Image (cartoon, rainbow, N blue to C red; front, top):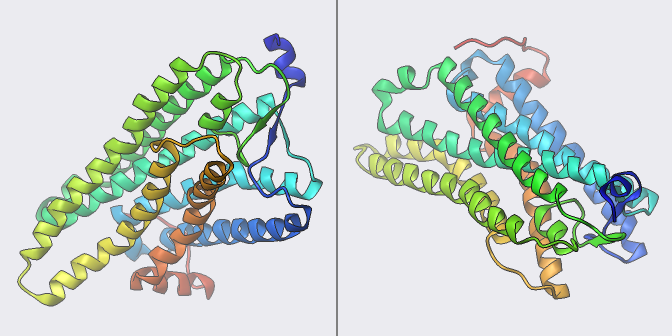
Length: 317
């Protein structure tokens, strides 16, 4: 198919969710509930941090950035899935698919980079507390987040451009509920060797390098905590890292399963891939506000003030 025709009339069929008609209504309500809770929960986190001066610290600045990224991340895939379920249509246009792919990769990689940045912040706070204010200044935090956004945009642009170079000969069934790299390469009638190599090396670097940085940071953090003489001091230090570790384990576990573990074309494998995709695209952004707020007294206090209308938005270091 010529690319001109491809961009105007070509469609993909997103076939990642249940095929049984009687399950569509349940899926719609479930995805709608998870999306609304995800957006509301992460938005409350951002507003609580912005309106409570006690939370105007680097750790909460990165948490607010993560919540914003999670809102955008889940908004890239779930609304289209809801529309398709409600209209009983699984189609997405060629241009819409590429746009969804670009933003999905941008916001997904942003989650990865922010989790690594938050680990570095905890490393500096616990291992070098006397230098923390100087090292993690507001200007440096803004610079780090800006660099993260720039890198994720470049990575997403690279992958999207390579997918744009592929040809798709007819209406193709994508074995997922959104446009992702692996499923799109599987349904292409072009040679995808370059795309696969870039996915392995660039995609692997985007996932594994931040993951290794997080592991190294926590090795130093645990080592420093174990040298704290008092049990109360150790408990306080561990509690500030527990929420972050829980999110890291959930997110990276499902992402590594989806992108770095080979899968076959069997129906069971496709179902497992879809389940992993639901976990890191929908469930993790849903759970993040609960994980961070339920384990954090400062966050709970800020949320109560916000919900009672006793907060005003401002930001100061």
